[in-house]
Length: 93
Image (tube, rainbow, N blue to C red; front, side):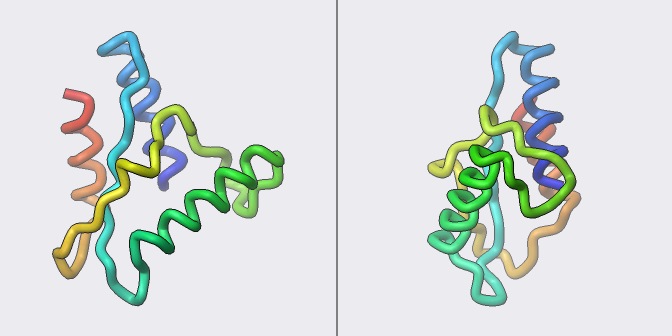
């Protein structure tokens, strides 16, 4: 899903603002997932991308839309996909 979100944001922000806007990643710390672990995962998939050796076959992220310093933790017990998509639309407004 993140691949699609990053490509969507890149496409729509270029249309609306004539520049690529960034995506803010917000997730819940549950099941042991923490911000440092998410950062390590980000680094891992970025390295795969650089090596053209993606673990998952769904395509690459649009790296121009992502920055590690825009990863955030929300203390809500659950974040839903719908919130993710709503937040993406807010970024583009």
